[in-house]
Amino acid sequence: MKIVHGYGLSETTCYSCFIPQNLSNAEHKKWQNEFGFPSIGIPLQCNEMEIYDDKGKSMNEGEKGEIVIKGLNVMKYYFENEEANAKDFEHGWFHSDDEGFFELDNKENKYYFITGRLKEMIIKGGVNISPLEIDEVLNSIDFVESAIAVGFDNEWYGEEIGAYVKLISGFTESDELKQNILSYCKEKLPAYKSPKVVVFSNDIPVISTGKYRRNSVKQKFKIYQKIQYK
Image 1 (tube, rainbow, N blue to C red):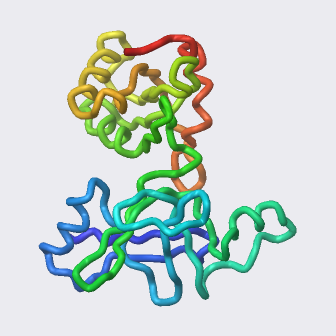
Image 2 (tube, rainbow, N blue to C red; image 1 turned 45 degrees about the horizontal axis):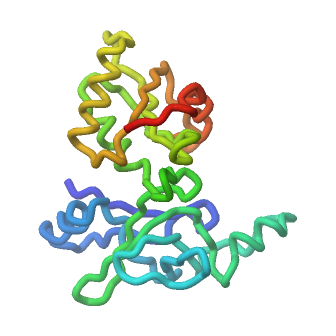
Image 3 (tube, rainbow, N blue to C red; image 1 turned 45 degrees about the vertical axis):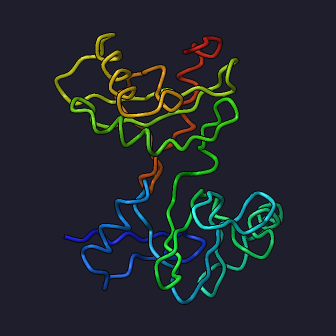
């Protein structure tokens, strides 16, 4: 079965783009598998989408920036919140706080990709790292039920990467399992993206829509703040 990805926010009446349903199997596979992230599709006719840098400048094909949206389906403003309105509607677009990029097809359609939440971006030694790629590796481990990558405060690199892990039933927390997780990530990820610490938990916190509350568990890694990892 073809998985049809779409993307949007409550502020954009839920959807702003979709993968076209009339793609051939080869095209569909291309947009799902060949760019490091599955595509969220092309804009709906009722709205426009762009990728902006932090100065409100449009980014080129393949360059990462913030996903911005405008059109008939975008709300007018936040009620009685001028500070949020000034920030989130800067330059005449609604700012999603999501990082992404686009790639063009042979008809100049822009296929968009989401690479992470800007507020959740891990900034390690001045390098921006999306936690989503690390999440995918962590959740591919056989004995892991669910896991998220967390950027925690570190005196050496600004932030370092931790793994917050819930094990499947039948497995017990141990130093051996921690090392297995770290070693597995080193095999699958570049060294600078690999978690350096594992914290086990019985629960991964989420909001009402099912998104991970990644930043809410940063304090679980506080004891590792002063350690320099290789």
